[in-house]
Image 1 (cartoon, helix red, strand yellow):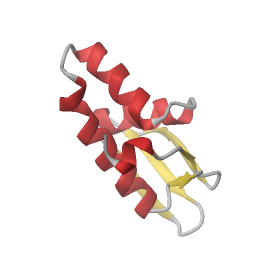
Image 2 (image 1 turned 135 degrees about the vertical axis):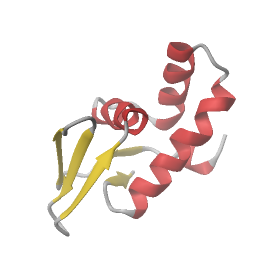
Image 3 (image 1 turned 30 degrees about the vertical axis):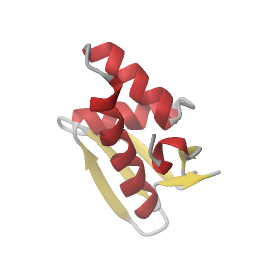
Image 4 (image 1 turned 180 degrees about the vertical axis):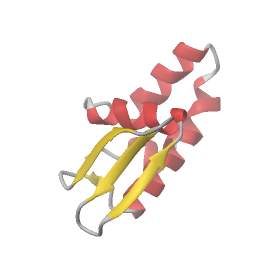
Amino acid sequence: MTAAARTQVRCAPWVSWGPGEAELVLFNSQDGSYHALNPSAARIWLELSNGGQPAQIGETLARRHGVPVDQVAPDVAEFVKQALGKNLLVAG
Protein backbone atom coordinates (compact mmCIF):
# COMPACT_ATOMS: atom_id res chain seq x y z
CA MET A 1 0.00 0.00 0.00
CA THR A 2 1.39 3.41 -0.97
CA ALA A 3 1.65 6.40 1.35
CA ALA A 4 -1.14 8.12 -0.60
CA ALA A 5 -3.41 5.13 -0.02
CA ARG A 6 -2.75 5.34 3.74
CA THR A 7 -3.26 9.10 3.94
CA GLN A 8 -6.48 10.24 5.55
CA VAL A 9 -8.00 12.88 3.26
CA ARG A 10 -11.16 14.90 2.85
CA CYS A 11 -12.53 17.24 0.23
CA ALA A 12 -11.28 20.76 0.85
CA PRO A 13 -14.06 23.00 2.21
CA TRP A 14 -13.29 25.65 -0.44
CA VAL A 15 -14.02 23.22 -3.29
CA SER A 16 -17.53 22.89 -4.69
CA TRP A 17 -18.64 20.49 -7.39
CA GLY A 18 -21.48 19.66 -9.69
CA PRO A 19 -22.27 17.85 -12.90
CA GLY A 20 -20.73 18.99 -16.18
CA GLU A 21 -21.69 17.92 -19.67
CA ALA A 22 -20.23 14.42 -19.37
CA GLU A 23 -18.26 14.60 -16.16
CA LEU A 24 -18.03 16.13 -12.70
CA VAL A 25 -16.65 19.66 -12.45
CA LEU A 26 -14.82 20.94 -9.37
CA PHE A 27 -14.36 24.62 -8.54
CA ASN A 28 -11.57 25.71 -6.20
CA SER A 29 -12.70 29.06 -4.78
CA GLN A 30 -9.21 29.76 -3.38
CA ASP A 31 -7.57 30.10 -6.77
CA GLY A 32 -10.57 30.25 -9.13
CA SER A 33 -9.62 27.06 -10.97
CA TYR A 34 -12.04 24.57 -12.49
CA HIS A 35 -11.26 20.86 -12.88
CA ALA A 36 -13.29 18.52 -15.09
CA LEU A 37 -13.13 14.94 -13.87
CA ASN A 38 -13.58 11.92 -16.11
CA PRO A 39 -16.06 9.26 -14.92
CA SER A 40 -13.41 7.24 -13.03
CA ALA A 41 -12.03 10.29 -11.23
CA ALA A 42 -15.58 11.49 -10.53
CA ARG A 43 -16.39 8.17 -8.82
CA ILE A 44 -13.29 8.52 -6.63
CA TRP A 45 -14.20 12.13 -5.77
CA LEU A 46 -17.78 11.22 -4.87
CA GLU A 47 -16.56 8.39 -2.65
CA LEU A 48 -14.18 10.83 -0.93
CA SER A 49 -16.98 13.37 -0.51
CA ASN A 50 -18.97 10.69 1.31
CA GLY A 51 -16.14 10.08 3.79
CA GLY A 52 -14.43 7.24 1.95
CA GLN A 53 -10.68 6.88 2.29
CA PRO A 54 -8.28 5.87 -0.48
CA ALA A 55 -7.69 2.24 0.56
CA GLN A 56 -11.41 1.67 1.10
CA ILE A 57 -12.25 3.30 -2.24
CA GLY A 58 -9.77 1.07 -4.03
CA GLU A 59 -11.45 -2.00 -2.52
CA THR A 60 -14.92 -0.73 -3.42
CA LEU A 61 -13.99 0.01 -7.02
CA ALA A 62 -12.20 -3.33 -7.41
CA ARG A 63 -15.29 -5.20 -6.21
CA ARG A 64 -17.59 -3.11 -8.41
CA HIS A 65 -15.52 -3.81 -11.54
CA GLY A 66 -14.48 -7.36 -10.70
CA VAL A 67 -10.75 -6.67 -10.81
CA PRO A 68 -7.96 -7.14 -8.26
CA VAL A 69 -7.52 -4.26 -5.83
CA ASP A 70 -3.86 -4.07 -6.92
CA GLN A 71 -5.11 -2.99 -10.34
CA VAL A 72 -7.24 -0.13 -8.96
CA ALA A 73 -5.29 1.10 -5.93
CA PRO A 74 -2.50 2.84 -7.91
CA ASP A 75 -5.07 4.90 -9.84
CA VAL A 76 -6.81 5.95 -6.63
CA ALA A 77 -3.46 6.83 -5.04
CA GLU A 78 -2.43 8.88 -8.08
CA PHE A 79 -5.74 10.76 -8.06
CA VAL A 80 -5.32 11.55 -4.36
CA LYS A 81 -1.72 12.69 -4.90
CA GLN A 82 -2.71 15.01 -7.74
CA ALA A 83 -5.78 16.36 -5.93
CA LEU A 84 -3.68 17.12 -2.84
CA GLY A 85 -1.15 18.89 -5.06
CA LYS A 86 -3.90 21.02 -6.61
CA ASN A 87 -5.30 21.91 -3.16
CA LEU A 88 -8.59 20.08 -3.84
CA LEU A 89 -8.15 17.68 -0.93
CA VAL A 90 -6.74 18.23 2.52
CA ALA A 91 -4.83 15.62 4.52
CA GLY A 92 -5.49 14.86 8.13
